[in-house]
Length: 193
Image (cartoon, rainbow, N blue to C red; front, side):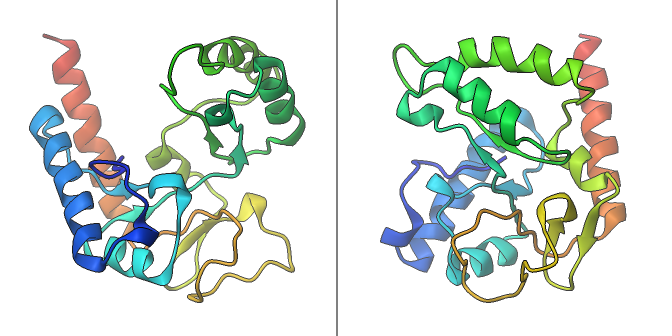
């Protein structure tokens, strides 16, 4: 997915700069992978109506997270693991970082969490696969994971209410299926090389 070209906070830039950040990252990914990128996570998960509009106009679906491990704050691996195992639910997206500098706690936490989650019956899927799992509903303008929304949660086009939800512009299910088939075909070809 797209996480912008230089990881600048969207709240500190205008619409044109935001578009440049997204498109520059998209072009860099395309040059390396030859795959279309349709998901974006804004730096620090910073959301606003402008972010939603720009992402939608560029045909991106904004993906945030349900569980923040705070690995970026160098939280000890045992605390990260405990937090995940105490709070994770089916359909959750867990925020973790592949590189946060020297002595990252993330690899050690993953060595604890992955076997524990597998033992509990969880399986790991891509975001594309998650969107195809029953439980994701279409509200007209955004998709959201019903796994994490209670009866009192309000999903609207209003500016972000501070809760991290997986807001997605509308997309035809057949487009997701087509992208999944194309990516699998490319993976199969690359595996045969």
